Length: 416
Image (cartoon, rainbow, N blue to C red; front, side, top):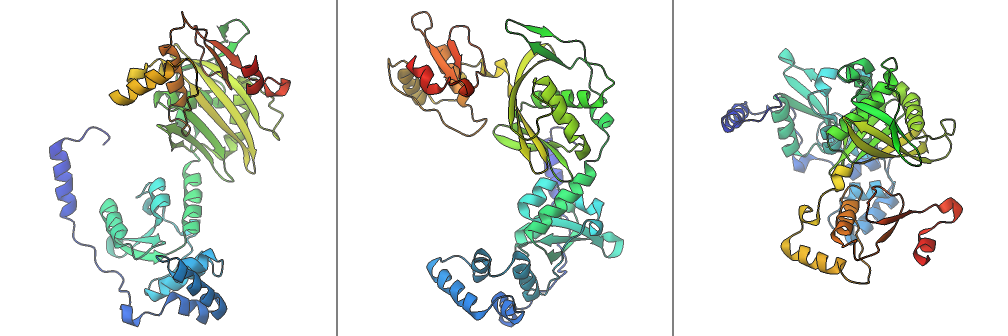
């Protein structure tokens, strides 16, 4: 299923999809000339008054491209539910607020949660002879291209009902939290005890700790998360407790991907385990904390920067994975064009000046800077850096760590 498709396989798949019968017209919207406007329905229902409608028309005249309904929503004159309910009536469609117990699990699993969130289309249930028809809830029932895409993805006829984006997101949270109540043993059953070993850092060296026992599922689970993230090439691990769920996400190539949803009841234990590994205060849950974890993954030393942040639903943990292997690349490996590379090397070799390297998390700022430092001739130059934090140690560079609490700031270091 996950192997590489051959050309013939793809051709066969396309032919099979194209052979599907066209979706039956399961709802017949009123003719445009027969439709009542959304605004008229909102006024009739007493949800919007004439003065608000007049204000919306004034705004619309100044902002072409926006509908009156969009403007009324922006003005908070009507809620998303009120507007979409009126839209449903104009199209002769049902408006529904999906509840968890009314969503068929098998129907929901026909589309990935990320796709449901992105497209605002929620599979609700099956109906009709042989359960051939899939009922989907959408925020934009006029999007016939999306309806057709869902039909092709699910290989079923579809019937559309209308709901709000808020209700779709809430339904996904409820359904994925149910799916995520999996046993930790299932996650870590293939995890060997020595796949990840935590190591303690002294002032002078790094030494291995006692081999981790297998009696604690939390310890093994945390090690599995670290191991799995490194194996997938992630730069960050986000562990985010929600009201009824726990999300573990990896940042890969600058984009966050949902990796797993362990039981939300594990959140306090996972956070405590990470704090112990980073030598943080496990009793302090009111303030943010930062620490460092050093681990050996299959014989490879890995540094992780841990930061915790109290939220309304628990402490969020973020681990930045610092792998020396990832910064061992040279400037030639960064993907610069020949012209840009020439300019960059010339600027780096200037005796004075400032070069700003900017970008979002995981975009390669640190990798670029360290590659540039290695490009310099350390035998002829005295190279110093001021960093917060020092992510990687370079043997030929004098690296200084800032400490705001004791007054060791960037400004003070630069003046020294």
